[in-house]
Image (cartoon, rainbow, N blue to C red; front, side, top):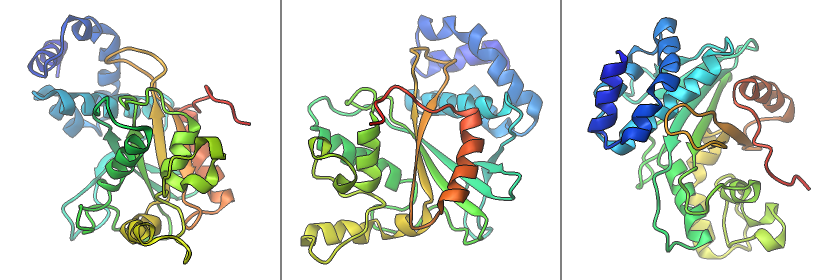
Length: 271
């Protein structure tokens, strides 16, 4: 792939002059991944992109991979967890501890402006859930039962109608109303939240729907873009863990590795 091929992909995908003007800034990221020799399928997909949403998702994956590779933290692209399943996970990061951290990336598409805050958080939950199972509950990814497998869905929710998500929005999506102050509650049952006998029937149904994600997914990595660049941008993160699957010491080790590539999104009040 060369700069001309990238320019053609931008045009085919509906991009304008602003995106083309960023090619020189973005191109070193593509070059680094090409030199690494592990990202040929990713670069090839970008070269032939002709759809806006797909193009933007590929740009996200390239920027994410660049942040790891530029810090000498190698990733493997498109890894199968189980040989008897066709689906693959976007990235694998093998830690010095021998933990295999699988990162499945999803770019949240733009939503309708008339959604309520509750509806938008539920949409984010549904987007995360779609990387784990079909709407009928049939599993589609994360099949490994190895003790050293750590499964994480990575979601860039920068296009949420809520604007820049805050920590409370992310906590609501993962852990639900009980884990935020009353002022931030939106009637949300979290993806990692435990069911209780006193909850109403519709919550029991949600808990059943989320059963596999609680048993399979170790964490959710929420990405944020503090800058407005279209192509060459840096992402920051909140990483929220599933307490059923990971202990504090292990989570701390994995977080240290991830945060050395993707910095913490500090624009919030931690109190």
